[in-house]
Length: 73
Image (cartoon, rainbow, N blue to C red; front, side, top):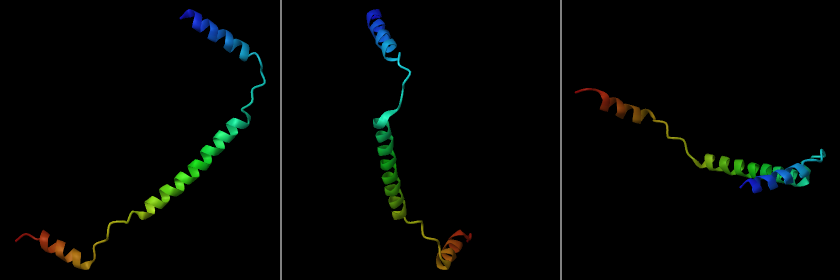
């Protein structure tokens, strides 16, 4: 095990010697693709939410029936 950590430390030390660190084009493309996927997912979610109908509001006839059921006899 100590040999593995030593090798990893040596590789990390040699690769981090350069101070020129930039995100690069690949990172930008990944973030842009995630943004595009998010837009399509949000559009799909909104479409699914529009399909859900709100519960019907009780009309005057339904209110009369509930009032009759609630009055004690």
